[in-house]
Length: 295
Image (tube, rainbow, N blue to C red; front, side, top):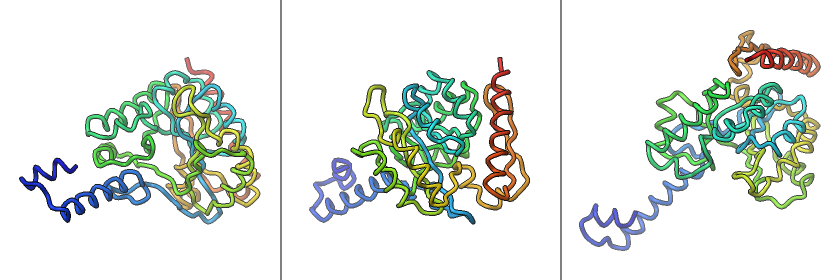
């Protein structure tokens, strides 16, 4: 930035001008690396409290054949949102199908996990739309939400998202599971104790790159789910968190297309947890059957 400052002033800047330039650069980088500041436009970060205590568990960087199935098993009947890498989704479409069959929401995390793709309008467009095209190829038509690699929210990326009608998603509670040393149970319990009504919790279901360090969240998911539910939290998707309680109370029906078939899922408000579980189980059975019949 400082050479550009020289060119703009057509002379060597004085130290106050250097200080101003460095301050502006620092503020710019803070906006890029801190999506909760929403420096370049609205970002869904939470918390978005509901009438009932709820949190949205979100998992980045998958799918991965060694780790994603373990996270899916640990979630059980509970719902989460997976922000998947486009190239990995094309490599493991059966894992994307398993996410959908279990009732989870599937969103884009870009075509690949690279911070350099958000530096220019062309690269930002390739990151965003390339990831959506990859998901489309494996049957996922949902393009409403997007999380950038590392959560980087640059002006070019935000411009592409606005033009495409896509809502950028950040987080309100970062687990740091990709660097936390453990143990997993202690990590999960402490994370659950920090959770607030409406939080978006950032986790990972796969290493950033093949052969990379395995995030602690993979081992901690089961304990985290048990602890959150024991504290009275419902685990919801980003869509439910975004749409709010009025959407849960309405009788509207949403559609999700995967594998060339459209499955309808009721969003009506359930009276109690038992009714919600029974309805979800029936819906997942219907979606699994429809997916199995897809050529």
